[in-house]
Structure formats: structure tokens, C-alpha cells
Image (spheres, rainbow, N blue to C red):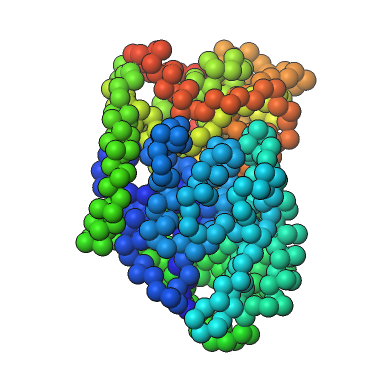
Length: 513
């Protein structure tokens, strides 16, 4: 038998890069054209489908106007059999999930999501019998960190239980009746797969623990956006595709119960061909939505005094980011907090002078809200030491580079933060953990050791994820429901022409050689 597995497709349906307005080999329709499903194939998905592209952003704001769900159309075209939910699928509340699930032909499987309303028809597990009689037991789970990240109002009718406890229960049931057991886990690997080094003390990702403490035959993972072609951990075979439907996992399973030969590969999504054209033609009823989205994306909202060229990662981290300064100013103006922080992006970001909705959604792709936390000087110092860990310094050559801590096992530039309202300096010749040599208010006023200050930041970072537990442990002063892309659009409209914003004093020595 064969398993085709996608995960973290993040709204990618068509082969289009919306930010750059150009074709791109990606999307569920291209996957559907490529996989050629037969009776010996199961098609599975690991969640995070409802967030990530302007198409989905627009649709979710106007879903009552349409008689179809775009992502459901993509998965239905693929012949999806079973799927689970990802953490971002909870971002828009129960009704958005219900709209999606109702339009799906596949069965939703999750043993750790409790539906209090009961309309989602979630099954804790399923047993799928293949044509040759092989009984495949399939269960699913989402990371328990949904309870940490998600806004409480989005979980009033849903409960996310401990994934380890619930998977153990379901596996014990499946083992009694099934020949092959499969877990679809929306979570990643908490260890470096080459060295075994623990990557985090948190329980955000627990795939290695699941592999060691349970004996699923196959573990299909996601969430990290990390390409894992295939890894065997204590008898469990694990895979993970990268995000945005750029690649998918294909597994081949031969043998009988207790003696399976499992192999896998990561398949790149190919350029659209005749099969894609047939699928697109069958979905012409979606053309009106596409046209409306394109018109919306090209709507002018304002302009900058001066264009911002795409910022290279290391240079931005060392010298500051003009894009991040805008994000931080939006947070400061909206909340009135003393300080603000925002992260470096995994993609080079820039802005031309004339700004459209497309530009904003291209540089800020997540539906993050803003929280305000109470912090002290000590907390700010600890958080900035985490930022300073982003750099490696070679004493012999004087070369500054990006630390492998932020590049392996997956690229995490987004765990480097820029701060506004502060005057701070790094000395990279000093050891990690002792690199912050200046920390004051932007006007040079000293930060008092026993004073409480307010810090505005995304709801994602507010949880302390990414190595910022010192922030996650601090009390919340204010939570907001407004999403950052909407706040950015509003800020640009009100402040055009937007000048170059300088809302921090930052320096780093030595600079890149």
C-alpha cells in the first residue's frame, strides 16, 4: 500500500505566490494532479489548512457569500481520506472549522479534540480495510499547545486534551484489531534527529516521545515545517513535509503484520500540466472568488516616504529592520505600551512606496493578535540575551554568522526579535548569555530593577515559545482581538506618507565582516 501525506498547507490551493503576484509550484490542486490515487493508496493530512494565504483570509471574512470552502475543494480533488486539525485551524473559531469540516468528503480524526457542540463529527480513530484485507488503524492528535496559544473565545466549544494520554488510550484499542497503526500528529520532533539533542523543554512537540513510549508503526508529523523524508525511532517510522504544499510525503508499505518494510520520499510539487488544467476547469465556479481576491489585494491603502528594499537576515539582525520598526510602531500606538517587540521573518521583507493590501498580507502572513505583558528589567535582559544567541562569533577571523541554534533542525529566524522603546547593545565577543551590555529606555533613562513595565507583542511570542519562557511566565495586562494585518492596514492608511520610523537605539559589535 501507499500513503500520500500533506500537512501545514496553510491555505495554499492554487500555484500562486500572492505576495509577489507570480506563479509558484505549490498548492493542493497541483498535488491532486500529481498523486494519481488508486485503491491501494490512502491520502492523509495533518492540519493547519485554514490560515496562510490571502485567498483564505478573504474567504473566512466573507464565507457566508459562497457555497463552497476553497480548501475543502482542494482536499476533495486530492481524494483525501482522513485528516486532523492543526493549531492554526482553531484561530478563527468553531464556525470556521464547522464550515470547513462540513464541506470535506474526508473524515476528521482526532483523539484529543473534544467537540462540545458535536457538529464536527470527529472520530477518535478509524479502521480502514485495504483491498487485500490489511486493517489500518488511524488516529490523530494536535499539539497541546493550542491551549497556550489560542484565544479563549475560540475554545469555548472545543477542548484540547493531553495528546500523549489520549494517543496511548487509542493505540491500545487499535492494536487489538489492526495490522498497521498510523498516527497523524500535528506536532514535531523535540530532538535534533541527527544528534538526539533536546531542542526545547516545552511540550509543544513530542514526536520523539510518542515514538519511544508507544509503538505506532507510522507517525505522520507536522507543525514544524521541517522536511523529514523518513526516520526510524524505536521501531516507529516518522516523516514530515515542509509547509505550503510545496512537497508531500509518499510512503510505501510492504509486508504483513509485525513485519513491514516501510520506505518514503519527499515529492516536490511540479509545475501545472494538463491534469492541473482539468482540475482547474472543474472548479471554474471559484473564478469569481479569485477575481474578487485579486481586486481586493491590489487595493491601494497608502504609501511610504521611501521604499524599503528586502532586508537580508544577518544584516537586519545586526543593524536593525525598517520593516520591524513599522510593526513595532503599530503595536506601540495601538496599545500604549512602554515597549514592543516583533520578530525577524524567515523570508526577506521589503516594501515599495505605494502599498496595497497584497503588500501587507505578504509581509505579515499570520493572524496574530497583540497582547500586553508586564515585564521587569531582568525579564527584558533575559529575552534580549536569547536574541543575542542568534549570532555566532569566530574569534580567529572576526566573522559574525547566524548560529546553528536558529538554523537546525529547522530554520527559525522568526525567533530573533527586534525591540522598540529601548536602547540596547550586544557585544558578540562575550559568551552567550552575557552579551547584553547596555539596556536603557530609548531616551537614555535607566530601567529600574524593581519597576514594572509593559511590553506589547504578538500572542504567539506572549506564550514564551521560541526560547522566551521568561516572557511567557509574566502576567497579561491586556489581550486584544484585532489581528495584526488589519492593524497594519489601518496604520498605513492613517499615517501616509509613512516616514522612516526610528523607535529604538540598537547596536551590535562587532558587525558582520
